[in-house]
Length: 457
Image (tube, rainbow, N blue to C red; front, side, top):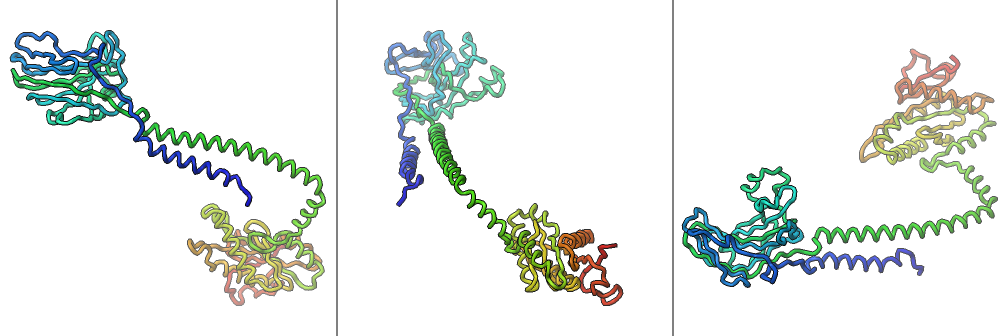
């Protein structure tokens, strides 16, 4: 069995799909980015204030190397708090740590006391409004934790941090600056807040760690999509180069074959010209009609021509599409060929126009045939799924003895044009009524709209 390019690519495609599936499932298992705040040498952390006034809250390290401290709320304060601060920026620098790359804050705290809540805060320096001389101008992002939240290790989403109203009010910033921001964090703090003068509080911080993926899920999946796009682009370029090379080889072969087969092409053109059937409607095409006319030049008897034009056919193509238009043409051709005389020949003259060649047929008989065909087209159901009303106009003329086809066709075409001008869906005969053997005006009423004109008038 011959191996095609598609079968050659199948194993590679299957491998690529398997690797893609593995990549989609692997993201949750990627190692995380982590940043731990520890009491290592050189770390800048402290309690505030370091030298409290008499009657104010007091702070003492129990074990500084383990972030273990206590505080006693003073008796001269209306609001009591003690603060642990870990500086993320070096002394004298406004450049901190980009915490926006992380997603979670892992905290393990051991607390004893009666504080109403603990406030975890992160200061973020933004040069657009923060000033080095005003430490409070760094954006204040915080979250409140209840003491009961500390009974087990915590995982706090950084998206839970908010900016307090008092800070936004104090600095009166535009709305686009008041959302939480951790892109340049300069300080991390834990505050104990309460309202019990003289109460003692003890806090041991076992873990402060920021965690997040090295590559976010969005970037990971976007990378997979980009990889597929890049691979598809490279594959497309490779295929294009290959096809161009093949096409170039084929052109060379065709050029050689063309040079050696001029006679064959000439024969092909001759047989194409001899083709007499319209591929769409299965009626004679114009060449076929011309051959029929040539064979009738010496025919004994009268020959009538009937031109048929489907009314408002352009609207069918515009409203229903060319596929529907083709089906209407095919159905109309079936009506014409199925209801014409055995000796008659039906052809598609062009577009939506058909021609009937009626040997041994007088104009009156041709007009009656045309009117019967007109009624059949009018009552035929076109496009059954979405019924479409179709009518046709008819022009009739007789070929006179010794007359060329072009002259008779011109009279039939004039009659067809008159049928259009009379409102369509009618038959016009390019013969005087009396010479055609039709009933004179005022005689028996015609049951159908057949109009007679004198083409010489």
